[in-house]
Amino acid sequence: MPKLLLWSITVAVAGFLFGFDTAVISGAEQKIQILWNLSPMEHGLLIVSSALWGTVIGALSGSYPCDKFGRKATLIFIGILYALSAFGSAIAQDPYTFALLRFIGGIGVGISSVAVPAYISEVAPAKRRGQLVALYQFQIVFGILVAMLSNYFISGVADWDWRLMLGIETLPAVLYLLFVSRVPESPRWLAIHRDDISQCRKILNDIGEENVEQIISEIKASKSTKADLAKAKSALTELEHHNVEQEVEDIVEEKQSEPKSLFSAVYQLPIMLAFLIAFFNQLSGINFILYYAPRVFSMAGLDSSSALLSSAGIGLVNLIFTMTGLWLIDRAGRKSLMYIGSFGYVISLAVVAWAFANNIGGAVVVFFVFMFIASHAIGQGAVIWVFISEIFPNAVRAKGQALGSGTHWVFAALISLLMPTALAAFEASTVFYFFAFMMLLQLVWVKFMMPETKGKSLEDLALELKR
Image 1 (cartoon, one colour):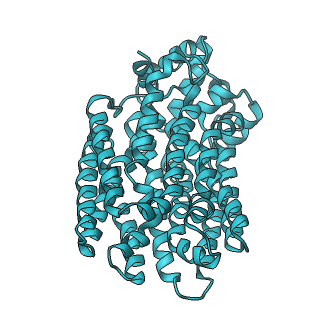
Image 2: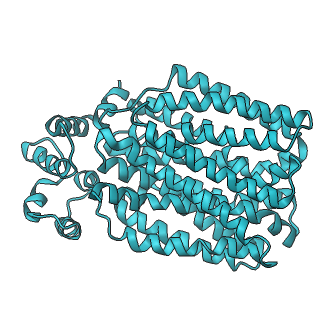
């Protein structure tokens, strides 16, 4: 297997843990609410959204360890957080300890949504960047599928089955830690953030490079000298980039001209794009469906076993259409996938709302919820992490990724916190009509504001979006 693909797959396994951690609570949340006799607000705050508030903190602060300690060290730290959270939440004896440990896991999810896309985008050539970064999303939905299947098969084995649902994540977290320790550091991070000869030497030896000393002399931070051009050129050549000379010149031009503060006026456009794609991602209702799928299907008239099995079906549909999006993203482009997803969102959400309004449940609701998941997987699901990782320049990429991820998770946490109360206060049809309206607004945004990033180098995009 080519090293680039191997590194990308290994790092993207953090997405599997992300997806598993996100979806596993759907099979456990109702039993936990009964066990600890929680009100809707307590349940939303302590059980369902506790991980998401950690995710907000992780996403907003994730750029700091990424830039300060490197992408690799951050990825290892993520694995430790996942393992600690999975094991600890499984043995928690009260809702407050449970919330704290889920919060810790959420921090890992948030940081991973910054570190993984940044790492992969920085090692991938432009023509393959979409597919390789989208491996992260593939792993997320694979994790969701495995969690939902795991919930289905574990459900009913004992009164404490929810503990096993949560604790089983410890195993893949430990395996991830073992494998991610073998990946090298991002060459762009080495070039821009550090001048550490011994660490560079160690990483190059770990991945079996020849002529290590020669590579070390060339891989340093790209600056404004001819020697610095050679440094970046070596790193890009080792990763099989084409048009190396032009790309290296673009890196240096970008390095000389860009401010280091994310909130400089020159970055207004990428900031707005990152905020809006993350905002619309969550206002589709995707995390509402993932977290409360069994509850939604029960409201549509399915018994508890059928509701859990249909939730597993969500995971399967998500996986299939994510694979489709993965295949299309560097062929059709990011914007085309967003069009497809937006139309699918509006149709599916409107029909589900209509079905609930007219007391038509069962197969109709299940089918159109599956259509909603397919629309998300091929559109927003495939595009969001790729798009955010592409639109910010090298010097502020981790900070920009943190902004987009933080926005995503703030709204995810708010929706998960408020949904139990909203479902108690409003008809289900009202909730789904609201999400359908928001997706109409997303369609307008895609049409008039979203740029296409397919096939462009990170440096070309940085210059284009600063104008």
